[in-house]
Length: 219
Length: 219
DNA sequence: ACCTGAACACCGTTCAAGT
DNA sequence: ACCTGAACACCGTTCAAGT
Image (cartoon, rainbow over all chains, first blue to last red; front, side, top):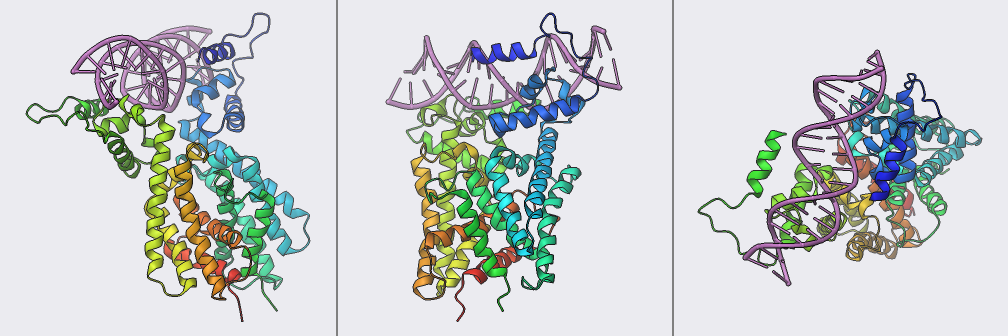
């Protein structure tokens, strides 16, 4: 407790004598606050990300974030948006190296679960109730839709190549999203720790395989 | 704000003159607090369930809950446990009426998604990070394991009836759990509102069908 | 034995005031 | 135009004191 006061005081206090102060945060305070929030998510978890702690970490007063974010919710929405961007990038990257569309499809799923298990707190913020209102956060909605779009596209590709059953690719993508999201959520929420003590990657492969067994066209 | 103060004061104030006070909460305060928390979860959502509000609703002082719950986390764990019990009951009930094991299997999945979509806040508490530590809450872990056990049992039944592929029923159950949990989580976290505007039940059927296509034995 | 009141260190948010 | 300080109404948690 005492420790916390001291450290926060120290961090947010006036700059140490000798070091000149940054020029009143030359315009990119929004970015600095967002970066601070992203750092907090990774270090202290979703519960520890408070507006005041973020401001402290960014070296500004507790009221300063309100110049750039309407509320804590809006800050969380920005954090979530960054998460969807990172997820999309990871997925795109892992699919790029696969020649076969079925393998690209599986790579997307594995990358999704990989992102979730390596960034559990960030993943949780992406699906937190606070940011569920997509109408209020259209750029977040767009970032989320882009990740989903990757799946739909690859499934359509598989169908064109005659490797996956016919049907609305969006519906198939929803089934696929449900499995990988489900496993990710169970891992992130630590529901599987004792129930089934195998390695995550192994589970991911087995679970996506079960799904593929249902989607793949058998000659 | 003023409204909130008044209403909380009114609720937690001394009993109105005329009505005799209950006999110092004759021993079932734990139960009363738990019930208050369950009511709060349904009415104000997971974010609104605070220890102080729960105490107010139960008509006791803010410190009273600590006699029965070690922390807010412990209260949430009790709420989550109740949730798993209710889920198990709903699932058991919906499967009871099905003759065919495959249909029982599908009924379990539909009941899971049904529970999640009709009690989204409760569902969220059941998988909240605060209660993820199963070692700290063994009775919660047991309640959660019981729900999973239903799935494993039905899958084993399907296998015995020669209707589902061979394999570790736990592994198959994990795949099944992932799909229904995934869809439930996406629904609860309102990820599907615009992406795919069909009714939840329809999605549930389609998604579980996709899974079955992968598990069912084809002659 | 069980509960209350008051206190402490936090929050999110607002708003007048400073540069 | 952008940020700070102080304030307000909340929290979770602790602890001496009451019945």
